[in-house]
Length: 265
Image (cartoon, rainbow, N blue to C red; front, side, top):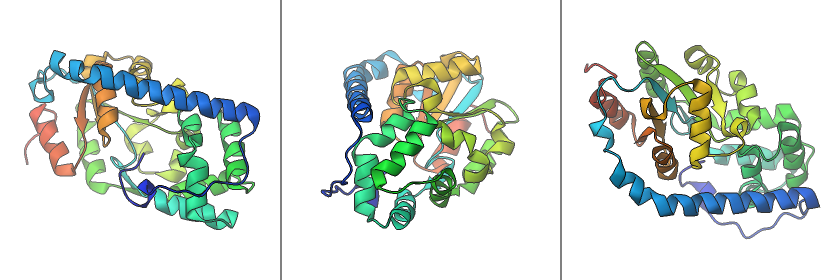
């Protein structure tokens, strides 16, 4: 998910090819699920904030693992570059591609694991009117990502004292091809790079975080989650994790100092 930018513009164009019946039903189900999650968070978020201590009140030394979002946390993600490449391949326009994949709700089907990797890639091509290959999908995704060196330097320091992992809202294709997409991550995180699709749901659904920390064999209250989207931070807190809303490297470093996870320079 991306903050603002060209991707936030509404698009009135509709893609010509409708979704097949079964996939259309799954798009509808995905939208209903997303709506329910948002309503659930809206109902509980205030209660969650009043019933838990603020982030700064965490007991020093209680955090055993830092769980990172990927896009716009560990890397700068420019969806516009990805859309432009896909539109070029399909002989289409950026607006039509964005409508077909993101505005339609199709991308959520991959993020939530409603579509497996093969069905997702096939449906992706059908939606943009072009038989997109796996290599082309990966390359378009790769062009949109640029490692955040300052954040990765902090990650390198953190891994000396606590465990680290990644949880990103994405199809399993991202984890499968992370060495091509963002090769800087593997030396730091090893195999602990998870996509929401693996857990058959997506952030901000609290179940996504709970399934991830269960896979990591840690208790939610010992995990600090880092995400650039406020809704995902709220979902993590509802799931029982500590959470930091990422806005800048400087603010993140200060938060880690407050938790006793980094030494002042």
